[in-house]
Structure formats: structure tokens, C-alpha cells
Length: 118
Image (tube, rainbow, N blue to C red; front, side, top):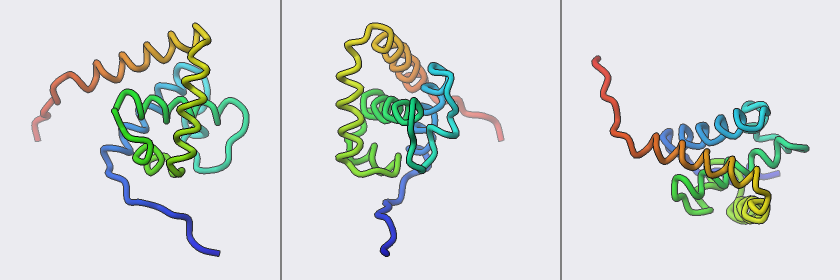
């Protein structure tokens, strides 16, 4: 059996995806560790991972291929996740939560970097 397709991912991308995962975990009360797991997920953790993929796509402006690389899935899977989230935004509570999380991310990344003394 061949090795799964993997593309090197920059550490900054891993950090940003981790932020999206932790924000979704905090907003949903689910485990960030389970959401980030490369294992096949069931129940709400799978959908929470989809929310993190969507946030990465929208808030960071990543193309679906980049989202897929960072989350360890192919572009089609990332696209399916984002389409599911777009459809679910018809639910006012989910739409409001995603608006808040997108605002948090954009506020954080619009601020200048803080240079710490060495």
C-alpha cells in the first residue's frame, strides 16, 4: 500500500489552522484535540473540523487546495466541507457564531505584530 499524499506545510499555516480549530472548539464546547485529529471523525467533531476548514478558507483567504494541505485532506474534501458550512449558514445561530469567529480572526491579523525583546 502506498503512502498517503502529503505536501509540506509552513509552520505559520499550521498555527493559523490551529487558531481556527481552537476557536471552533471554544465556540462549540468540543475537544480541539479531537477536531485536529487526522483520524476519521464522527458526530459533531467532524462538522467542527469542517467549520475550521471554512474559517481558514474565508478568514485567511486560503484557496481550497491550501486548506486541504493544511488539514490533511484533498481539495475536493475541503470544498465539500466549505459547501456544507455555506448551506448551514442559513441557521441564524451558526451564522452569528461564524461572523464572530471571522471578526476575531480578522481583528487579530490586522493588528501589527508585537516584537518581543530577546
